[in-house]
Image (cartoon, rainbow, N blue to C red; front, side):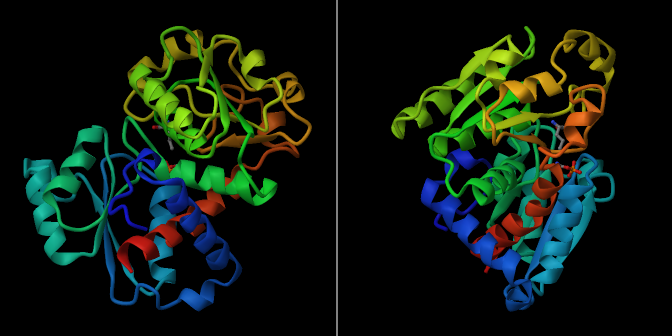
Length: 306
Ligand code: CP
Ligand code: NVA
């Protein structure tokens, strides 16, 4: 992998993403063969927000590769007392081989990459969530063999997860349709940028609609995420009102293609963004997505830190 950082799938070539997928297949099939791949290597993990999957998959992943991961809660390190991101990056670069960070401001990741000397991995920012999208597209790729020409429908909030799915879909020549209520569309700059990426590979530009049934029609995957992301808790009540009619339902799944799966990055709220019968039903692949976080991230770690 030539690209040094993993800040967005937008920055990676399709060949680089496929290199991660190919290695992830091997890691998943035969994890013990890679038990020393990152022997003696360390990953600092800065968390400004809570996490279950990201924390555990990176920590266990580094352990399984023979390396170590350090959990650095933002309140536990000197960032909390005003040390700058730039100085934090410079100092951590003297100790560790890579930095993974979950942040509010996306700029913090860019600053870690700019001022540090080691690879930086985005473990979620307010703008993007690339390691999630990697696992999601890997999950679909495992099932379907190829992603070219498949349709991804995203229903709900045009948030960080939606943004990264837009970039990923464009890389793979997929069709992407996003259905959001007014005021909750994806960032227009991200949509424009994804449309430019799609054009490069001859794929259609993403569609943004108000109609979830239109987005779901004929889709190969129907994806949703929480209506209230981390940091937006004060808006929760207003969001529940605004998103009425956007819960992924059995009717929406029926409008999707015959092989369509239901996807969610988790954590999920049954009865809000998804009906319990959908997320707990036979088409749901949400726990495969969660498991695949481990395999794709281990692959990326080997390619970036090895
Ligand atoms: N999907 C995801 O990133 O989960 P966590 O917030 O638990 O890390
Ligand atoms: N959009 C969600 C994703 C959580 C993994 C959030 O940012 O809280």
